[in-house]
Image (cartoon, rainbow, N blue to C red; front, side, top):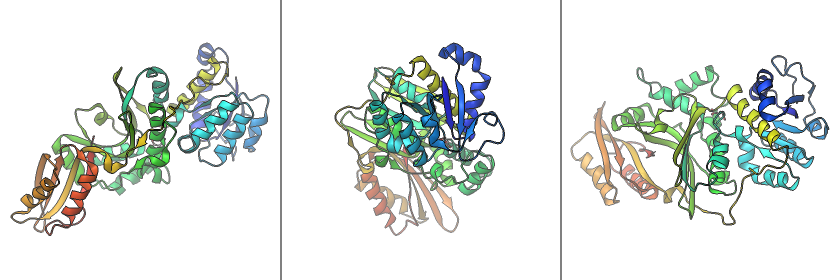
Length: 422
Ligand code: HSE
């Protein structure tokens, strides 16, 4: 099999390194060698395993080459990469991509083009790096009715939350983000890592596969981690939780909820132990129970490995169109709005430290039918106190109304922090 590698960055380099280092076992397992016919990128690679290969800066030219069987798209972005993939598929070449934004936002159209031209579009590397979660959903759980998926699917956000929660001097969000950038985990512009967009791209893909739905990135509710305060980690820990940024897709069979947000996760739950840049995805299905996968979510080796696995799949299926293209039911599930969904909620409320305030707060909550699971208070400076509490499960819209009412209370100072409990 001959491939074109389009994009000569971290993942492209990782793919070339794996193809070089493991050439013997790839040939054994896939039945033939995988050779890189050409490397295409805007600038030629100056060093590493891509440097001595044939190079072109004319990306689209790879689509017309008779010595290229499969185009590997590792450029990122949703404009040039989309054009490249469309042109490749129309030219009868299967494509392997790591591009989550492109699959999440334009995947339905691209899969349609692939089917029309009898070729495959494979995307294991687009979600959670080394974790074979696409295969788990499409193959291992192909016969299982899935109830929900919950995943830590952005390593940078997980690293930041892990560091902010660590013992010792409590560090602010900005300090830890600067450290993540210095260590090379976060992007130079980490906006999509922090604001939840990157996780939402991945969740849109997982949700579509798990529930046989169209890709609905624009309907994923997105919350990032920028609003988490160091004190939230302290209260969460006291209540028996850790704070994780999760992507959650859940279906009752009639409706679908897809959201990414910070959550309190019980210290007893598997997801709470996934720290640093690691990713972890938990899938709950009737037949299989809880299936948990964890591993490195990014990087040359982990993501490169997922790309190579897709290439070997293509070798094994003889470059025929994938039987693993996403399927869809005829009926789209109704999307639940966030305010229609139910969960327990953690609230952190800064109040004036004077008699009657605690009972005033709990009375407002009771008036909205909100039952408390846990509550604590801590004195702060200047006659202030912080009340932290966890509610029993309640509809989000009701909590939002209660929070709005509490923020008008004369003893409540500033904005109330609200975080879901998973
Ligand atoms: N920026 C992403 C992360 C890379 O931190 O997880 C993998 O998609």
